[in-house]
Image (tube, rainbow, N blue to C red; front, side, top):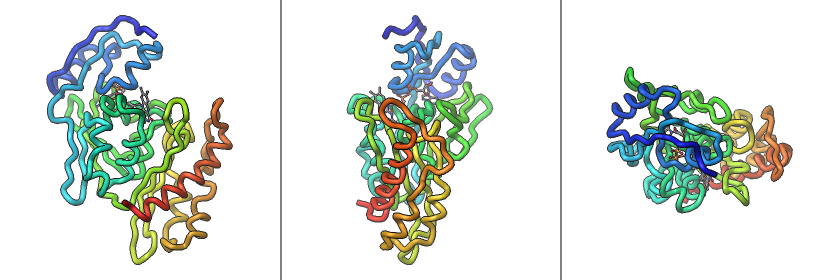
Length: 284
Ligand SMILES: Cc1cc2nc3c(=O)[nH]c(=O)nc-3n(C[C@H](O)[C@H](O)[C@H](O)COP(=O)(O)OP(=O)(O)OC[C@H]3O[C@@H](n4cnc5c(N)ncnc54)[C@H](O)[C@@H]3O)c2cc1C
């Protein structure tokens, strides 16, 4: 549980961090909250020669809401998300996920940007960001580029981030009818199954839905079949809502491990997406 020796440098600002990334190449690794990178270093699953601490860079924290869109700085901690009244009202899916993530120590140090950049297949935010149709702003030497969540999460621990880029902010439209339902792993607290749902309602029906899972497959994914089946359903029609949430993980090879088989995870996906839909229909 002792990492290999490494150098530590602290970046003053984003240009300084980009310069340090460029200078250290494959040997350099960004450090935000450290709650995924440091455990990986201690297990010797990662052995960067230099860690570039971006944790103190000013201007990369905070939650801004202009009434329609919410923008979150990449260094905003899970605890800040979990205590945000703004998110509780306007993006409960993210607020709930932040409240159910890890423990107080993890929430106080870990960051939303780090959690998304890490791309852990059992992490909570990837499903949430897919459901919210979030936009990730990535900053590199040539400027910034925006990329949608659908194109950001590529696979197990794999995202669209270039090694020489920094995730600087995440933005999405207000989503008052959204919710997250999580089956916690009893030992790690990570998601065995996490279901994130965003609903658009009109005239007593679900006009559109975005539904995504984490924990089930090799990476977070959208349940397009459930999204299509929910569209047009009356909000009070329990039988139709139940039917729409069946076979939610169809077409996905569900992961199995010593705690939960793939078959069990797939069955629980149906249960947890139904719970998330019910909660999204009755926010607050
Ligand atoms: C005991 C424990 C329990 C946990 N439980 C959960 C849980 O239930 N659910 C869950 O989702 N997570 C859980 N986590 C993980 C936690 O959410 C981490 O905080 C998060 O995954 C990583 O964020 P960080 O800021 O700590 O990133 P770091 O550990 O500092 O970095 C993680 C990776 O992302 C890169 N990175 C960080 N920030 C950026 C950036 N802005 N731009 C580009 N790359 C960046 C780093 O180079 C590194 O590769 C748990 C962790 C622990 C230790």
